[in-house]
Amino acid sequence: MANLIFNITLYHYLILALILFVIGFIGVILVKNIIKVLICAEFMLTAVNINFIAFSAFAENNLIGFVFAIFTVAIGAIELAIALAIFYLMYRNKKSVDINDYKELMG
Image (cartoon, rainbow, N blue to C red; front, side):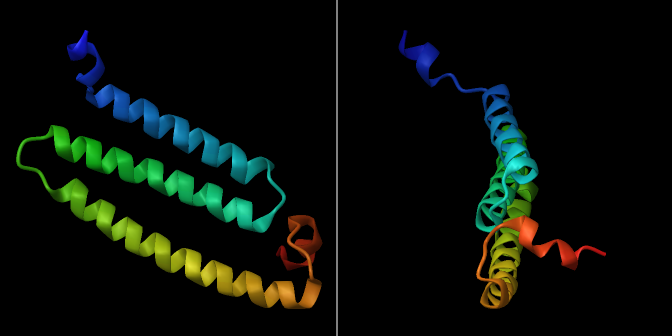
């Protein structure tokens, strides 16, 4: 019984990443709050990182996935900081976090 609990394969990581990606994708599509949309985008980025690390861990002597995961975490942090700064500047004018209030920004 103990072997069944601790026998985690690549498919378990892929299913976890798929669930996180779907939650993030649905959140980006359906949610109207800008902060929640950014959080859902980070969920999607985390799912991609799980895939990178899972494939790297199950390959022999392959650290490329770990390097890509660290790189995407750094890029994600920079992206989130810039997005929050832009949102703060927009929020000072509109006093709203609803996406529908920013329709005039669409090209």
